[in-house]
Image 1 (cartoon, rainbow, N blue to C red):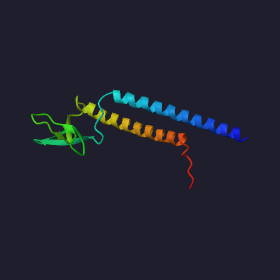
Image 2: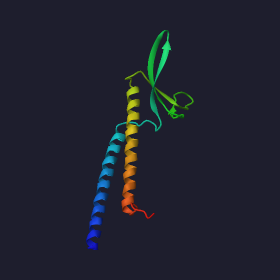
Image 3: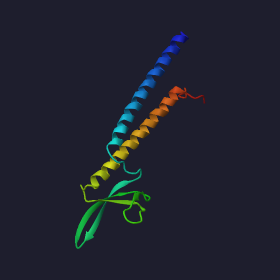
Image 4: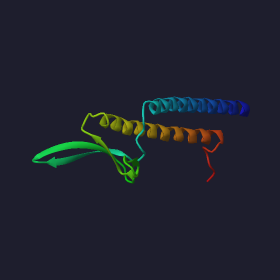
Length: 133
């Protein structure tokens, strides 16, 4: 009887490992897809909207912004800036900037889930699901 229980436990363990491996492969496929769609925004960057006032008119513009200098500047002496000007809504720089932030967020979340599933796989593989207290 002990052998039958042990065999069922092993089968259950193999089924759970297979489910985890399948889920990991699926998430990695999604992640690779989004990474191939275009540039990813830097990790802590976001799109900010700001207003410029000139002669009693207000204009709205967008920029990528980061907490520390991240974006290369143009000019004779290249430096890094916290900002990357994207222009008006819908401009050729604005839309890719927003999409880069969206892709980065998706890829980052997918990676967190992949890492979590890999940790679960390690728990099962090394019998560390149960600990003696």
